Length: 99
Image 1: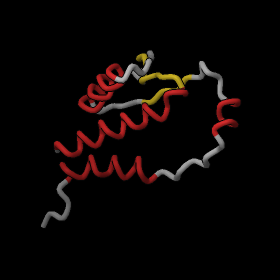
Image 2 (image 1 turned 180 degrees about the vertical axis):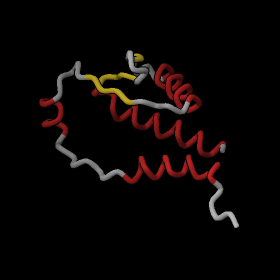
Image 3 (image 1 turned 30 degrees about the vertical axis):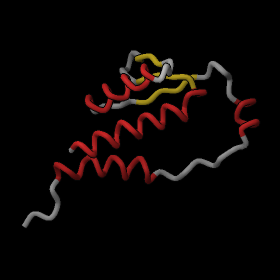
Image 4 (image 1 turned 90 degrees about the vertical axis):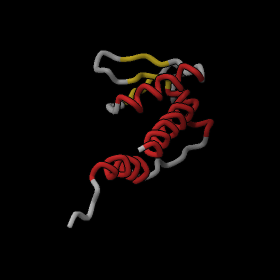
């Protein structure tokens, strides 16, 4: 008797992993803006090719400046973090809904 269909479990585990992280402590916007340089950068790795392609298309469509680093991670400016997070969550949600 097979209890788990692993084909469908992987995307849900990804969502649980992303959603299950403890929330960061929110700092007032004025403190964050003073502490972070306007040119500060960040990056992340998206290994799923379908999600990655959709996310890169969405970043370009929303005029978010990004680049591909030597390690294949996607780089972006910290000032765009909220928008990048929103677009990444949207891309993951679309992928899951199509599975």
